[in-house]
Length: 408
Picture 1 (cartoon, rainbow, N blue to C red):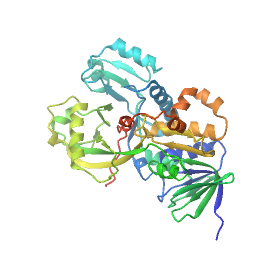
Picture 2: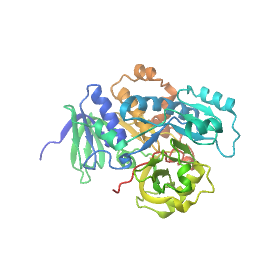
Picture 3: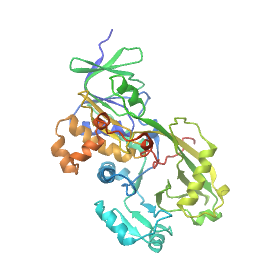
Picture 4: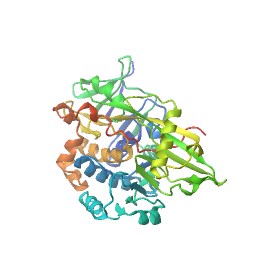
């Protein structure tokens, strides 16, 4: 029997998170083996063609708010020219009075300068964004083709080994190494350090080494609508992204004068069915009315032209699980990214590389990480009685990552 390959570092999962972590390690002179069950990178949720990203400014723990600011800046810097900056508008909640000074002070408290986030009244928002609602204008809000970005990160490199069509079913420790086994309990790879950067599959992998992760799936369906050029909706369609109760991309005008508009997203907690549902499209039509404050809009005029269904992996406290697994030295986790895969992937690459290479304190301090932020992401938080109540399990799963349709 052929002796399995040994690698210093193995990354399990070639979605946007695994690809970003692997690329960060390559940039830092490491040799990396990346393993995925598919035949290429970014075949699940990371197959999104149009994912939006912006700092979180709504309700949430102070740590979440601080972390998304850092993560946004890291993501913006990492993807450079691929970062499609079209701006994102976040309307004021329907039941909340808009107070510019109050909102401006709140944004300042989050260390969000005016070049990132600014409060606008309805008239200003109409002039700048084409949306007559008060709210916050995130001028650097952007979208990213996650599929292309993931594959670009894994281009041929002398220090990169890719193992496609390979499922790691179990992990096992032997001496100072980790064994990666398939479903037949055969050792397929060995490694000194293993980064688990998969979604729900990470739950079974961790279970194989006696670690129970509080993960669950949330299904989300994005709808792609076609709007005729002479329909009343045409004059209402946004030229920027909107993120509120639901989300959308800027509408795209096609050659025949009609429009293509992506709106999402349905929210099906605990479900992992990838099939398309008419009920999800109906929900998204209502989301569209709310986003544009256009309650009189005829829902039948939003003609379905495609959809994308993704299943997100979420944890119990609105935050991802990123960092070293102290109970099992040599194992690092990057999972439960929920709806913020672009942001958390950029952050995970820096955090895990720093921890894996042993220079975390100096590097992370330069990036703005404080010790409490690292602890807030650490897997260990679930093993010290700190797990949030079960009712909080969906808090990081409200999808904000729209996708292009798979169908031609």
